[in-house]
Amino acid sequence: MLDLDLSQEIAALRSTFRDIRAVVDVGALEAEIARLAEQAGAPDLWDDTEHAQKVTSALSHRQSELARVKSIDARLDDLEVLVELAQEAGDEETAVEARDELIALQKTIGDLEVQTLLDGEWDPRPAVVTIRAGAGGVDAADFAEMLMRMYLRWAEKHGYSSTVMDTSYAEVAGIKSATFEVDAPYAFGTLSVEAGTHRLVRMSPFGAAGKRQTSFAAVEVIPLMEEAQEVEIPENDIRVDVFRSSGPGGQSVNTTDSAVRITHLPTGTVVSMQNEKSQIQNRAAAMRVLQSRLLLIQKEQEAAQKKELAGNITASWGDQMRSYVLAPYQMVKDLRTDFEVNNPTSVFDGDLDGFIAAGIKWRKQNHDD
Image (cartoon, rainbow, N blue to C red):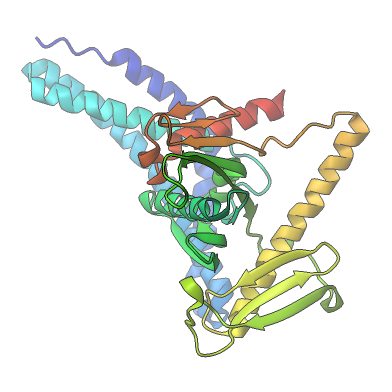
């Protein structure tokens, strides 16, 4: 008989999965799906398009979450059957299949376990990510564009919906800044650990040959709020500028001045939007992001005041958080968690799960201590 004893590994997975199910609360999830399905089935649902989209999106997210949990349950049962078949038949090919499935399940359950650590107030919300080129001239602008592609590829690999809302192109190459939304369950909780200063060290393709260049880019991540959580913004507190949408090199994309820039005068917060077709749509989208940003600023100020009262003022964990080194050696290292990989190409192609999981665990440990 083939020696294929995976019983301990499977038992450990079942134990972890039981804990996850308790946190996810499958019964509450099914009740929420039933409630949303009833709303989605209302004959007048699409009379209010924005509300309808929210209901159907929430329903889709909850159904996806439940399907994921049920799928793992079934796969664990199937794995035990597969191991039994391999042992009875002495079939090495089936044994290899069982081992591969065990490894795949360990990753899937590990990912889901990390998600259960996302218990912050806004963690389940969609994320709005803004990337800005920092010090480093053309290299920094190019680096900012590399980071934007990295996050969009990460979203694509996971099947998450992403929408580029605004892009400000640099003159020679790359971008000055870009803002995009990732709409997926727990997008904000997941991506919020990516906020901070990112640093790139490489042989510059734009400067003198043989000279290393260090450049920086800042990543900001905010949750996109529901309308019920909006901050009231008086009209007198904002300045609205309208301009023509542009592509790389200043090329005109639209024939009308549809892009919108809103400046919140009291805080100096600026939001630009040029993804939508009309000025009205761009203004509405920009206001929603501005309200989300202002709410976050308000909460951060409250948290800072509490820390000051407690006499515990520390630097933000998000600053100078990751280095991407392409020369003289190849390595990407997170400076908070010490998680590192020696394949920057795969990281820039969206292979971020290891960094994100390590960041979420690090944040949880530090917040709980």
